[in-house]
Length: 87
Image (tube, rainbow, N blue to C red; front, top):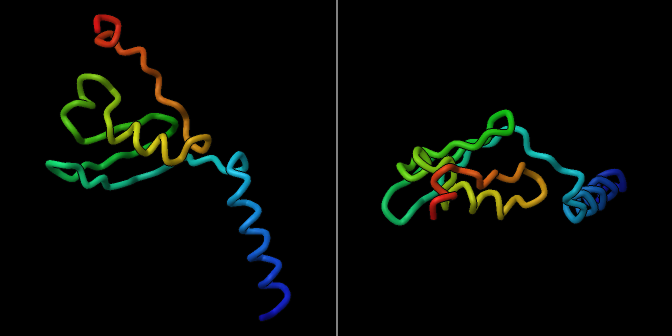
């Protein structure tokens, strides 16, 4: 294998292990939910999901799952919904 390619592979491994180097700005993911597929997007630091729950709470299991998978690389969702204060 060419030495410059080997160097790039080693650098990629290092970057992958140093997740703090990565920050996701824009993202679109299809989550295959238990009942339907849902589109989760991250745009300019704001989350959105096509599920009904997200519309009322501005957070849902789909967005929280993506946030958990990409921990440290995406902004954390605020859990300050007015509905949460009454739970």
